Structures are given as C-alpha cells and as structure tokens.
Image (tube, rainbow, N blue to C red; front, side):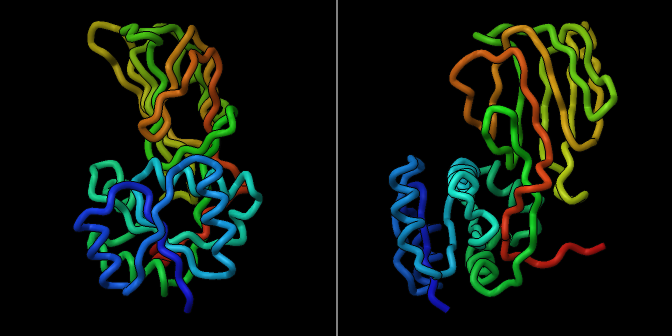
Length: 233
C-alpha cells in the first residue's frame, strides 16, 4: 500500500520514531489552506497518515470537509504527546504508542466517526468553551441542549466536548457565576446559546471576535473515515 505521511508541527524524536518505523519521510505542511491543498492534491490515491496535534488534525479534516472529500479520504492519525492529543486519541480508542498508532493508521479497517460542527463553519474534535469576552469573569447566557434549557442567567463558562461513545453526541457542562459555582451536566445532539458578548474557544484556538450566538451540533452528514479498532458494544 502506498502511504503519505503528513507532519504538522516540529520534527522531534516522536516524529522520527514514526518515520523510522514506517520507513517513510514525512511531508512537512502548515495549517493554511494553500499548503494543505497542495498536500492533499498530491495524495493521488495514497493512504494518508497524519502526525499532528489536535489543532493540525482539525485543520486537515476541516479542509477535507470544505473540499467535499472527507467522505472519500481516510485519515489515519498518530497523535502528538501533548495532553489534549493524548486525551482525544484515548477517546477514539487509539493506542498511545506511536508505532502501534502508525500501524493502525495504515492497516486498520476504517470506522465512521461522526463529526461535531458549529454554526460559524468550524469543527470541534476535542473541547470547546464559551466564556466571558476580554477576560470578563462571567457573562449572561441562555442555552438549550436539544430541547432542554440548561442555562439561563449569569455563567462562568459553558464547556462542550464530543461524545464519541454514542456515535458522537455533544456533552455539555455549565458552570454558573453563583458563589458556589454550581455545575450542570447533560448530553444530547446540539447545544444552542444566545448570550452577551462571549469568547468561543475551539480545540484550544480562540475565535477572533466576540460572539452573541453559538451552536455546536453533531452533524449527521459529516464523518471522519478513521482507521481504528472497531468500538465494542
């Protein structure tokens, strides 16, 4: 099988271990549209293995969505060693050892992983958060998780993550601005929020301007073709 290894990030011992194991030199790319398009255009039917953190993975999958190719190109992922990448790879059932993850990326059967999108055109793979704009400790918001009102008042934050154990729902934690900072937890398919000016942070990357509305939702039309072990149950 012909394979292309894309690397987003520095070439360190972790990456050299992967390259030595696969006997393939990685192609170094950035996350901007032009570089990703050039790399994806050059695949020419080769299996794609991506060595990257969560931000790099997000960029590649989002570019495939916008090229309308996410349903056609499997993306094997060998996660970086940072906390967010290791946590996400664990949620997906991928092994922590880079050589095992690389072998899966090349040889495993493809599993459809439903993706979580937002109404501003983005993609959420790991963790999202709504919080006060410009460092504000709290903000006013009303949020519905599916048809259930989960927030109505002054909040510290709303934390969101995909739930890959239920064919990708959306798990939400709301922390209020009350003295005891009461938190609520819920699961569903979408979270819709209307609010005062707020900061949206998606997979560690802050949105560049304040928002007053934000929706995350499990998109039934978009799936990541992930070479990975089948999920039990």
